[in-house]
Length: 479
Image 1 (cartoon, rainbow, N blue to C red):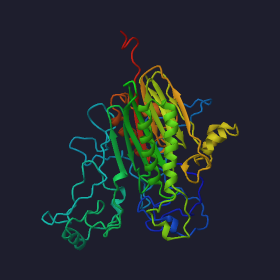
Image 2 (image 1 turned 90 degrees about the vertical axis):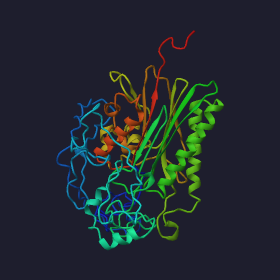
Image 3 (image 1 turned 60 degrees about the vertical axis):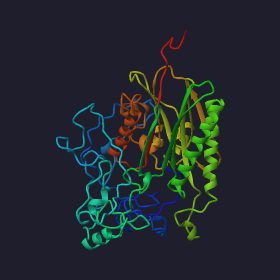
């Protein structure tokens, strides 16, 4: 995610696997190497990676209105990227639904149906249990229909028959999803090739009747530091209320994944308790953000799980995350946030304008608000995405933002982290990538949006929740 100001480790590549790094990475996105334990190196000149040669066939961005506040959208070909061996990344569409079936387009596009991007839900627990009575372990196990092998698997060492035999001989052992031969140790790494194994949070999905959410680790980070909570309840008069909370862990802080999970759970529970009591949705949202902040603050007093407490010389920030949420109830659309995760309004009638309903707590947004820069200048600065508001014990001051709207037409509410909106920043850009039937198929549409971000480079964790908003026809329900 866009992070609060943080020191740089000074590395351009991982010292363990040579994967290109960004200045704020705390772990290598390919092998999970802990970069905070590496001595700070001198400043080196920037060495950009090679840009993807052939962009994926997404539509060109429309001409930009000089007076518009939205910046130009990023398309897949705009972002640099190489694999861990320094070669250009493949330009075919990212697939997460297993082998290409007979007759299908090998580039990953669907050849039948509506033509929408079909993103199946990958199973992060793709590692298989070794069965001593099964076929020899040196034969690669077939890939799960819902989970691909890691992109770095192409650079894994060749399977060692001896290691495979040992893995198969161990009852209940888990085979590595990368080399399909080594046994996974208790620390989550393969003893043969050293690859970290997928975690349960690497890809998460949930759908209720009126809301759906999808969260994915992305293609660069070694773990998913996003979290979400979606639910539905009823108001005292029996009318429905739907809520969605999305949290993005601050990667430069300690235990960001725990922070986002604690915040999402606390905010969701607070809303589910307040709304049935008759609390106004906007007040309930404010109280939910305060509850989330308290949950994250409490983590600072708990021992961590990343080993930092064993090294008193390691720099540690308190666990931190951003939060954004939406409640649809009683004809109102209420949003609340702290940080740079966003809410967009996309009407079902795409002839009417979409809108962004939140304002970022970021350096760039402050420069624009103060009139010191226009938006293009501010977002071109290297400090643009440094956040100025977050949840955590070291936050300057908790200032929850809330707003209430009463749309006059039906549409869908898009609640997302910057892992998505970096690839569809303007409201019109977001409306173009949200499927036309999003109100009827929220889970499918959330999958499409995650697929869009993955095709764009997947440089961050990606989380999106979709909440349909329906306006009753005039006269409906009248006697």
